[in-house]
Length: 407
Image (tube, rainbow, N blue to C red; front, side, top):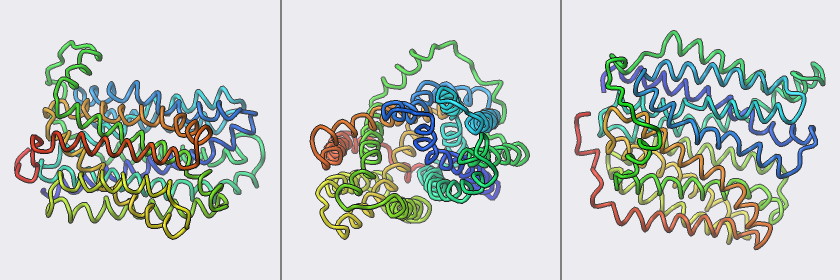
């Protein structure tokens, strides 16, 4: 990888990082603000799900547009749209406006697909999974810093006033400011990776037909389904782990938040540092297998935890496993896909993850309520086991990116 490619990687990492910080700022505000607008628990759940629903619908379209017109314009449109959605959120005066704001944010959530395709454009195949690890590191850092910034800026907003955009909604303005800054920086410093996007063949293929074509490729189909299972398993876990630690260990919000900041730190270390060491040494397939197995064990371990010490161990294992799962599976998909389909394939994969994040919270809450405290985590562990089994059926036919030295 030459100096120009390394510089481009740093720029796209910073772009995604700032975007995820803004996203992390908004997340803690949603349930509290919705309750101020007299939202029911079901409405709060729907408000949390609408972002992923819109992302599922439009992420492949944005990815395909980035294949045709270039990564840079799609990333810029996404950043501009996210900025507008945060401003709309900050000025919301009723629940329906919050739904519109989150729907807009999901519609413009093109950054991740375009950024993954951007990395695929500038990295050789044997380095691609390592490059994808930067996206995971940006996720982790964003989810560590975003809530922290929300906690710091919320009291400032309350000191300035109680009517929108002040009060706790002031943090949404901070998120808008960060995304606006991100737009400016990307406009001036983010280079295009497709030299002549307008010259690419623009086949007149409908989205459904293209989606079906992607799924007709057995290896991609299997990787997508594994990714969906793990996204669903994580969503089941994430939505219920806060009531779980409250009910079983009597943890308050602050202690739980600190604990999950620790999980975020481990994920960042895994994806930003250890992945760079492990993938060249062991290869994508072995690292992915370890990640899937570690997540399966940790999901079951959470449900069986009756001591804080055991919970700490299995949550650490979960963070490492998740950090080892995402970069290799995305990297392998990008190697299998044709070069002209990188953006669309990344968009389809992110849509599969979005389906999991739509279904997971509802399923997790139902299992927790109807069966037991451990039921959502046992279900997640079962899904991870299915993912391991499916991966074993295709592992011998998957390419080894470490043996491919050219793009």
